[in-house]
Structures are given as structure tokens and as C-alpha cells.
Length: 133
Image (tube, rainbow, N blue to C red):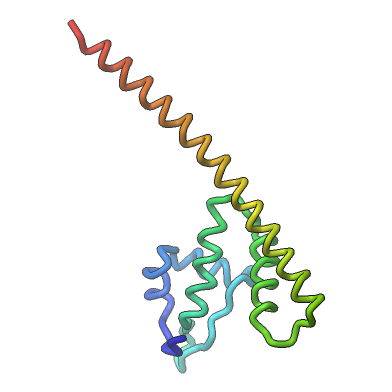
């Protein structure tokens, strides 16, 4: 991965998260800047951006900060060479559970979207009927 450091503004632009949101995720321990500049500015790497993208993708699905923290901890641990076979399987099972939960939440959102589209179509029909003389 690219080891180039980015300031928080560039990270915010790339992730489409506000500076305030990124700082909040830092305060809650979900993400930690990889470095600080001599002036004390937060500096991030591509890995930090990838981590923020995971968080950004979990948020609209209704995952809690604790669930985000748990998933990130599991994936962080999977990325290390140290886990035993048993620990690796347990970590993979945790990730599978999040994937299954995400799939269920996505299906629920699809149902809500379909209902919203039906509602909008009903309103359009009503407007078209009302516009006729």
C-alpha cells in the first residue's frame, strides 16, 4: 500500500465524511491517525482511509459503534500472522456473522425502498389525475 500521508481534509474528501465525523471516530477509538505532522496535524495512510470506508459503509446499515469496533478488531487480528488456526476460524466466524447481518439489513432496506417507490408512484398518479380538467 501507498505509505504517503494525507491530512484530514484530503481524507474527508476521499471518504465523503466530515472532519467532525472523522474526529468523532478517532475519539471513539474506531480509527487512529497513523502519524502526526510536526505541527500536530493528523496524518492518515491508505489503510486509514480503507478503515474509514468500512465504517462509512456500516453506518447506513445501522451498525453500532461497538459493532464497528468489534468487526474492525476481528479484521485487524486476521491481518496479523499470529492467530492460531482455532483463533482464525473464530475470527472468520465473527466476520461471517457481520456479513450475514449486513445481507439481512440490505434486504430490509430494499423492501423499504420498494415501498417508498410505490408511494411516490401513487402520488405521481394522484397528481396526474388532479391535473386533468
